[in-house]
Image: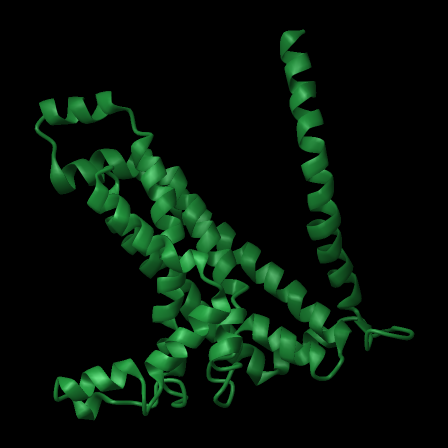
Length: 292
């Protein structure tokens, strides 16, 4: 009886949040999927066209360019932010004044607006007055100076450092919290058994926070696939769609040509790709956990 009352109390407490989430997240996703089957300008009548929007997406080379760029972002996030944040968490998880200061410094970009971050990195990459080319000049590496955001061959890779810098602080805090929740008795037992350093991290700490790592990977994938503001501020998807992402592709296809049905189909495609990538990552990481 007590368990039943507790369960009812929990459900009652969660109900407002679930209802709000359903109204502002789930319902719009379903509504967007519905309008993906229509030709609709946002006002007036909508015309049912079946899968024509999805067929157009499939045959649009810009979509495939955007998908390729998004895969680069996903890989950079998962294999850049996660290992870097984990390494910093191992170094900075203790609580002395210097480590607290360094944690705050790494987390600082999370406090800044993405617009501000984009403008900062625009100045860093500026071909004439940018800090990066200035440093290359000072080091005698003039041949390394490039048009970082104007060269379509390297522009997408130039966006990776600001992406990592912007969000690594979030995963740092998540991993520090996970490491601090490992019982001290386990560390004491490991010390008695002679485990320390890398051996202790690989055999004890990492397996115990593997669930947290899986959550961080989900956040990385979903965050990378909906990346918009940083890219839009720095390049607007250019030059020649070289930095186009799925989110900017959806925005440009929807609001510049007023094709809301086509944009809804793109947003539904993004959701499906997200579910596919997240499901694959969870399958791979779950197998890795079982092997360990």
